Length: 399
Picture 1 (cartoon, rainbow, N blue to C red):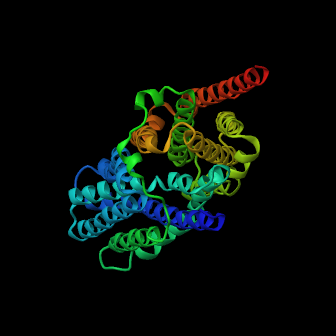
Picture 2 (tube, rainbow, N blue to C red; picture 1 turned 90 degrees about the vertical axis):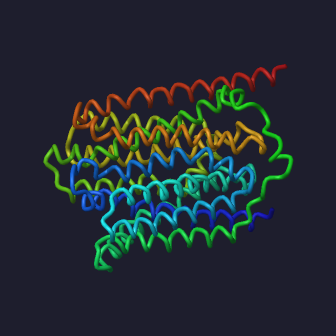
C-alpha cells in the first residue's frame, strides 16, 4: 500500500472519529437532561441512560472485535453504524412518546455503536506501515478535536427545532451515524485472510502475560480512569468552592483541548523518543495534575490541573495503544484488542457510575489521592520496561 493511500485511509478514519465523537459529545450533553424530563418519579435515575451507554459500550468491545476479525473492519464499522442509527430512531420516538424505558434501550444501542467505533484507532494501525503506525493512531484520535466543537453545537442547534424538545438531536444523530457508514465505505482496510480467520494464534492467557501487554493495558486504562474521574467531578468540586457553571464549562473546554490537541504531534514524539518515554511523560503529567489540585482550590489550580491531566491522558492512551500493537500477530489481534478495550471501557463504566458519589462522599482532595497510586503504578512499571529492554539489548549486543 502506497504512502498516499495510507494517508488517505488515515484521513478518512480521522473523519469517522470526528463524527463518532460528535455524536458522543451531543449525547453526553443532552441524555441526563432528557432522562430528567422523561422521569416522573425519582430524578436520581436521570443519568441512568448515560450510564447504560457506557455499560453497553464495554459489553460490545469483545464481540465487536471478534466480529470484525471474521468479516473485516469495514463491514464491522457499517454494522455498528446501523445499530447506532436504529438507536437514534428509537431515542427520537422515546422522547416524543415520553417513554423512559425505551430511551434506556436507545442508549444501549448507541452505546453499542460506540463499542465498534473505538476500533478506529486500531484500524489506523492496520493500514499503516510500522514506522507510521504511532502517527496514524495519533492522527485518528486528533479527529476528536473537531468533535469538541461540533458536538455541543449540534446539540444546541437541533434541541428545539421540533415541537418536542431534544427530538431533533436524536434525528440528527441518525444522519451522523449514516455519515460514518458512508465514509467507512471509501476506506481501504485489508480484510482478514482465511489463515487469520482460522488460526487464533497463541492462547489469550499467554499473550496477556507479556509485560508489554500488561503495561499497555494499565497505561491506557489507568490513564483513562484518572482523567475521566477528575473531569467528571471537577464541575461538582468547583461548584462546592463557589465557582459558577460558566467557570467550570471553561475549564472543561480547556481540558478537552488538552486531551485531543496534542494528538497532532504525539505520534511524532513516540517515533522520535520512543513509546516508553512518552508513557513516562504521560504519567508524570497526570501526577503533576494531582499535585496542583492538592495545592489549592483557585480557578488556576482547576484549570491548569485539568489541562495537564488531559495531555497526560493523550500520551498514555496513544502510547498504550501503540505499545499494544507490538504484543500480537495479525491472527491474534481481534481477541487481544477486544480484551484490551473491555478492560478500558469496563473500568470507565464503573468510574462513570461512581465518580459523583465518591466526590460527594470523600471530597475533592480524597478523589485526587485515590487516583495517585494508579499514576505511580504506570510510571514505575513503564520505567521498569524501559530499563529492562535496554538491559536485554545490551546483553544481546555483548554476546
